[in-house]
Image (cartoon, rainbow, N blue to C red; front, top):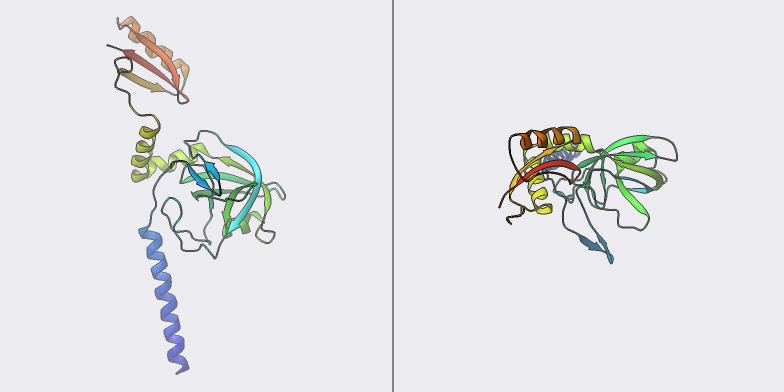
Length: 224
């Protein structure tokens, strides 16, 4: 009887583990910036990020939220390294430095929070253990957004890339006025943009303008 009971318990554990694993695999999540939202009377404004660095208090969350769905549709696993932030794009990567012991850790941000005054990031239980704040519960940290690493994640994940493009279109909708219509090319540095603008002018094109928009240089040929 005891052996049968032990066997049934083992089967239950295995089935439960498989079920949770399947949920993790089936719920891949999605890329999102999201609209503004209000929690406890405070309104937060998620936004596209090029640079972010902040010093504040970190906390952690674990068993109570284990297996729940994160803000971007992933399954929260307290045994994996992840984090919640109030406004950063989801998912993205951030470097967290525990200023009390010098430990550093790159975390995957895939949830919203923490919604307690003074706290800037909520770490998974695993991340809290690695950074050495699991026992204390809180620690003073520095959080830095890792732009290149986050952008590589978007580019190598097809459905993230499509969702990112849609988010960018929401933030910068195309205008269809006579003033705004025209050819636009974007460049990461001013030298390349100036060179292209000069070539277009030398070819006889008129109304060639060099602009700086959304942290990029662009060349525009307007027409009416």
